[in-house]
Image 1 (cartoon, rainbow, N blue to C red):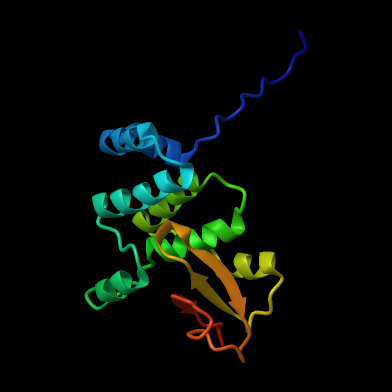
Image 2: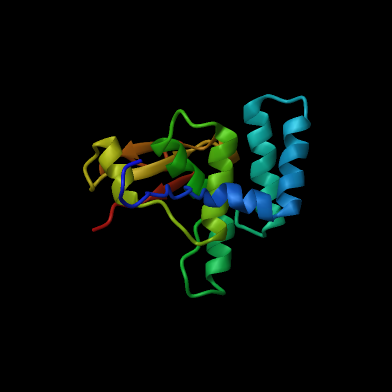
Length: 161
C-alpha cells in the first residue's frame, strides 16, 4: 500500500434533491404528480401551478410586479426564471426545470442574464422576449427595432443600458 494521504471524495450535494428529501409536502406532491397518467409537459404544468401556490411564489411577471410594490427587493416570477432556465438547458427534463425555477425563486436565486446573452451569442443591446404561458414559456431575442408587443411577447426584458 502506498504511503501518503488518502483523498476522500467529497460527496457532491444537490440542493434540489436535498430540498425534496427534507420537505415531505413537496415530496408527496411530486410523487402524486408523477403518478398521474399524463404526459411529461402536462406534469410540468401541474407542478408549475401547484408548487408556485404551495410556496406563495409569483407565477407571472404581473404577480411579481404586484409584490414589488410592497417590498424593496426585485422579485422574479417563476415564469421568467423558467424561461431563462429552459433556454440555458433546452434538453433538460421540463419537470426538473420547473422544479429548479421554483427553487431559484423561492431562494431568491436568479439566472445570470449575461450567461443567457453569451449562450445566445446575442448583442447585449438585444431584448429578451418571453412567449407562451406558464411552463410552456420560451425565450426569443429581439432587436431594438423590433416591437416586442407586436411580436407576441408576454414579457420583455429590456437590454441593460
